[in-house]
Image (tube, rainbow, N blue to C red; front, side, top):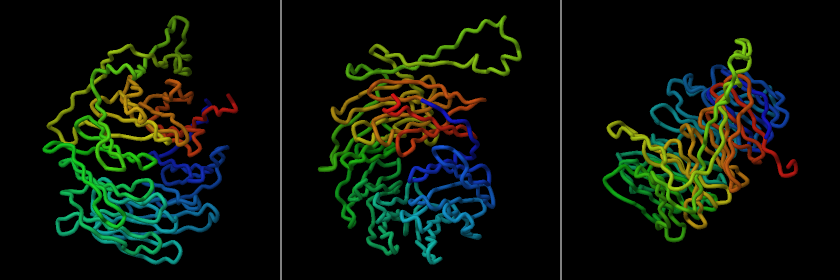
Amino acid sequence: MNFSEVFKQSNQLCKVSPDGKYLATCVQYRLVVRDVNTLAILQLYTCLDQVAHMEWSSDSLFILCAMYKRGLVQVWSLEQPEWHCKIDEGSIGLLSSRWSPDGRHILNTTEFHLRITVWSLCNKSVSYIKYPKACQKGLDFSADGRYMALAERRDCKDYISIFVCDDWHLLRHFETETQDLAGVEWSPNGCVLAVWDSCLEYKMLLYSLDGRLLSTYSAYEWSLGIKSVAWSPSSQFLAIGSYDEKVRILNHITWKKLVEFEHPATITSSKAVVFKEVEKRPVVGTENVSIHQITLDSSLFNTQSKYEIASLPVQVTVVKPDLDRANPKIGISAVAFSADNRYLATKNDNMPQSLWVWDMQRLGLQAVLEQTAPVRCFVWDPRKPRLALCTGNAKVYLWSLAGCVSVKVPAEGNFQVQSLFWHGSGDSLVLLGKDQICLCYMATDEEK
C-alpha cells in the first residue's frame, strides 16, 4: 500500500471524474483539476466566491461549482478551458444544485423549496418545476438516467411526479399514502421506486414506474421508524435500518420481510468473527530524546494499532442516548451493500465504535469491527467485497474475508482521516482530512 503526498482542499470538496481519469478539488474559491495517476495539475479555475458544492457531469467534460450564499453556479469545461457558464438565481436564492444524468442540464433548487429550475447548457432554455418537497431525499434519478422521481407537497398532501429526463415532460403524477414523505429512491434496475415516511411513522411504500402501489411495509407502530435505506446492486434486496436498532431485509418477489438483523450488546454468534482494535503506544526513553527531536519527529509518540480476534462472548461498547433530545443517537444510521451483493455493512448509532458486516448468502452475522473511536465513514470497494473505514485519526482500516488491517497514513503534520471514498477501479482510496487530501494506492494482484 502506497500513499501520495498531501494536497489542500476546502469543505471536503474532492471528486474523481466518472471516467476515473481526473481528480477535482476545491481550495477556497479555486478549482484544481489533476491527473489522477500523476497528480499533476491540468487545469486551474477561479470562481467568484468560495465554493460550497462541486460536481462532475456524467461524461467528465464539465464541472459544476455552486456558491449557495451568492445564489450562483459556475460551470467549467475541461476540453475548452476558456469556455465558462454562469447561472445567477438572483433574489430567489439557491439551496442546492446538481447535474441531470445527461450532463447538459443543471437543476437548481431555490430557497424555501419554492421551485426547481432546469437550465439547459445546449440551448440556454429554462424550465420550472413547482412544489418540490423539503425532505431528506426528495429527488432521485433512475440508474439509466431516463427518469427523475420528485417528491412534491401541495394542499398538505404528498405526491410523486415522474419526469422523462430527455425533454422534462411529466410521465406520471400520483398521491402517496404517506403522512410526511421523507425520501424516494429508485431500485438499481429502475423498475421500482421506494418511498418512505418520516421517522414518526414506520412506512415503506413500493411503486412501479406507472405509479401503481406494489406493496406497503410497516414493521411496527407508535415508535420512531425508518432511519436509513439501501438497495442491493442487483435490486433483489431492500435494506431498511430503523430506530429500534434492527435492519430488515425485504425481498423483491413478495416485498415481504426476508430476515431481521439485530445488533445485540453481547455478541455470542459462533459464526461471527469479532475484530478488536488494540492500541499500542511506543515506549520512548526520554533521556535520549532532545526537544528538537520531539518537535521534528511527532511520529515518536504516534499510537500504533492492530486488530486482535476477540474470544466470544464479546461486549460491544454501548452509548446511552439522550432520548429527550431531537434526533437521538440511536438506531441504524447507515446501511450499504457490497458490489457483489454478498455482504451488508451496518452502523448502529448507540454503538458508535462498531461496524457490523452481514453475510447475505447465509443471512447471518459475518464480522464485527470494534474500533477504539467512533466510526466516521465506511465505503465498499466498487469491484470486490472489501470495506474501508475511518475513525477521525491518522489511520485507514480495511476489512475483507482475509481479515482486518490497520494502516497508518504516513503524511507529514497532523493528517486525520475524516472521510474517504474509492476510485471507481478499486485500485485507490481518496482520504479526506479537515483541509487536506491524500491518495492511498492498493497493491494490485500483479504487484503482489
